[in-house]
Amino acid sequence: MPTINRYVDISTVERETKKDYIDRHSPFIQCSTRAKAGTKFPVTVRVGTEYSHPDDAEHYIKSIQLYDGQTLLAEANFPPGTLGGTGQKSQAEVTFNVVPGGTRMRLTALSYCTKHGLWECDPTEVTVEAAA
Amino acid sequence: MPTINRYVDISTVERETKKDYIDRHSPFIQCSTRAKAGTKFPVTVRVGTEYSHPDDAEHYIKSIQLYDGQTLLAEANFPPGTLGGTGQKSQAEVTFNVVPGGTRMRLTALSYCTKHGLWECDPTEVTVEAAA
Amino acid sequence: MPTINRYVDISTVERETKKDYIDRHSPFIQCSTRAKAGTKFPVTVRVGTEYSHPDDAEHYIKSIQLYDGQTLLAEANFPPGTLGGTGQKSQAEVTFNVVPGGTRMRLTALSYCTKHGLWECDPTEVTVEAAA
Amino acid sequence: MPTINRYVDISTVERETKKDYIDRHSPFIQCSTRAKAGTKFPVTVRVGTEYSHPDDAEHYIKSIQLYDGQTLLAEANFPPGTLGGTGQKSQAEVTFNVVPGGTRMRLTALSYCTKHGLWECDPTEVTVEAAA
Image (tube, rainbow over all chains, first blue to last red; front, side, top):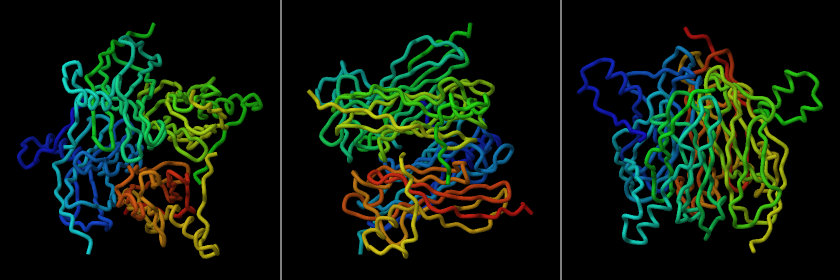
């Protein structure tokens, strides 16, 4: 409360409108599975893969957060209208760059739609190799 | 994932350190139970009631969000050090002002500690009366 | 670049539409002129005094920041529609609570309108008395 | 007030410490000079080119904002410690993706250091071609 909606593999979903609804709201993490300690590591988060979300002022993707376990690494905030504006659809996308320590990261992302609330993705495991 | 920790009534908790841990991380909503549609309605969110949280640069309360159901109403972000700084303890607190429509609100708050992650409180129900 | 618009005393402005334009975009700080070191000190920032701003999805007050000199103390972010929504006018308002150290603060606020950019107010001087 | 520090071409600056100070705080925009209306356009903002900034909890780069003229396009917020942490230096960097309309953009970026305040760069002009 607020509910956090979780991604469901849309290939298991039958109804086209539901596939679209889930996909266009879910954040997806794109990054390498191996990082190097002390070296900048790019992590892209995109909301939607096959489907796109409106960018209307009354209904848009407002923010994307990136976590490593319980720890917030970075967040991006968007005003409405910067992804094409009224009547357009797009996929909010941001690339953060983190410098990992430790030996692994467990990345998750959280996105927020002004009409349909919070959405999170399954964690992405990253192995962090010691600096050379 | 990230886990959202939920407030537990600390009178039911035995260990003093656990009472302290739960209380100092939980957001508490203070507001009237009745609002008037179209009229500014103040909602205070304070992190902690009986206990206080460090404001060290490595460990502080970074943000407070206020939701009505799934809908984000407002959020506040704090840098470290503005609640007394290293070695001090305090309770992050912010008063938002929303102008409700509809007939009721179901307010919840989410706070984020840079060491202990996300915390939420039980919802507060507010009845919204029609404008005179 | 971006320009930061500064408040101008509207009693010196002749045209009513210009008075309205300046007032409804300018952040105003309300706080005591004396604070106590180590004690929570409330600072209210309200955008507009005599005039109000739309809260339309395409045109609303998105954020308020509070600075002490060059140092950010706190910031609040608002989605559109939480101050009454389309066709309504209101004044965005938030009360932060800071715990001052030092001997004085020089507070300023910055607000952002999604159509008319950044606005700041004149600094408010606060004397900080030593803790008893 | 707060002052917005502006980038100065560091090849014109003599003192090495001043070169370092200016470079490590200034946001730099990297993007193509031509965009296509309705098509996602990546814009990278990096704080520092030749020099790097601490990522200590008491002293780090907290945020990066991207503007087109007076209009905020996107902002990123960082907690301390995600660029290597205490004793490390790095360059905060984020890639936003905007979908331009209109015929040109005039991009600027604003970065905030928790010790040395706000910094902006010179505008980058982007020509926006009509969608095919």
